Image 1 (cartoon, rainbow over the protein chains, first blue to last red):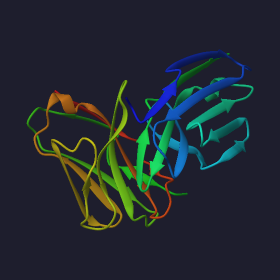
Image 2: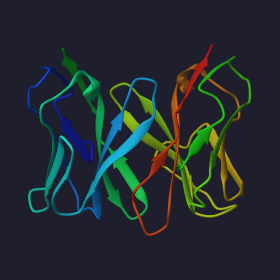
Image 3: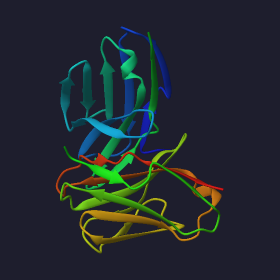
Length: 107
Length: 112
């Protein structure tokens, strides 16, 4: 079993829909990261969380430490949100990654 | 603007060749990482380095070696490339004491 599990693996939405991606991890963490990878490969960091909730524009990330679970929400989704979203847990300097969620937002 | 730069976006090599993938960061970060990314398997850590000339094996180091002679540069070496090393390779760096990593654009390596 992977230390970091994401669901769903693939998600298709219509423009404007609310999107939720889930991430569960099996052991304790120092921080949890949400990353975005566009076609072409480059990865950018969206959020780093150790508790509670963070918001940036239309993106919201939450984490529940007791339940070892985090969610990434995209409100009013747009075709430019189409990307792979990756959850990653940090323990010390080491990051362990989920398999990613491929999101396609159709106009 | 912070930057992690990988030397090639696309690379095609023959089986048995020695392959060098180079990564340079301009943020004076102590930590540097090499990952490979494969469909269905996500990102897996090959090697990392937390200081010049220091290296640690990651989860899948077999068939790879690394070199860190200068703080800003971390090289991944495939001593004798094999077809099962066809993959996307990503370099990242981070500052000691933080977990936020900055990634390069990736090198898509095909071994034929």
